[in-house]
Length: 146
Image (cartoon, rainbow, N blue to C red; front, side, top):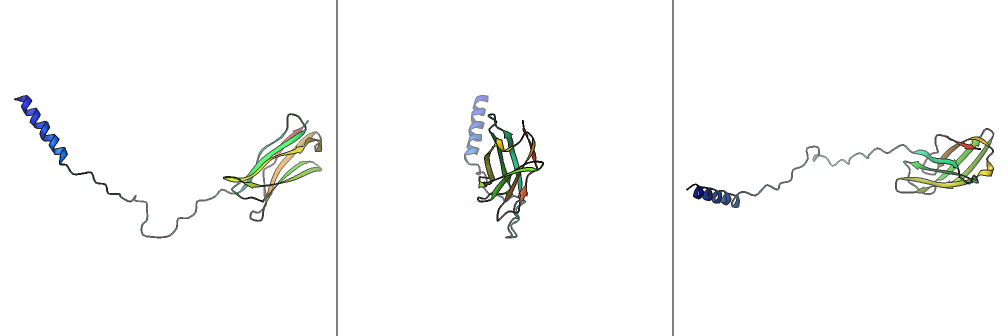
C-alpha cells in the first residue's frame, strides 16, 4: 500500500509540472535609466594632455643616446616632438614627427650622436606642439654621460 501511495503521489506531482505556468520572460528597465528625456549623456572626462619621457639613456655601445616618449591625451599625426638635451650653456634640440597610435601620440625612439655631449649630467625634456594642441613640456629627466 505504501508503495502504491508513493507511485500515485509521484505521478500526480509529475503531472503538475507538465501543466505548470511558464516562467515570465518580461524584461524590466533598470531603475537608473531616465526614459523621460532625450538629452545626451555628458562626454566622459578626458585626461589632461601630458608629454611623457619613457627613457633617456646612453646606449651600451656609448655611440648613441636613445630617447623615447609619447603624448598622453592626444591622438594625432603631424605634431612635432622636440627633444631638448641641455647641460648648462650647451643645448641640443632634435625634432621628430609625432604619430598617432591607438590611445596617444608616439614620439618613437630617437637616437642622438653621443659625440654631441660632453661628460657630465644633462637634462632631457620632451616638448610637443601641433596646430590642434598648445605646447606641452614634460618633466625633465637626467642623463649621465661618462
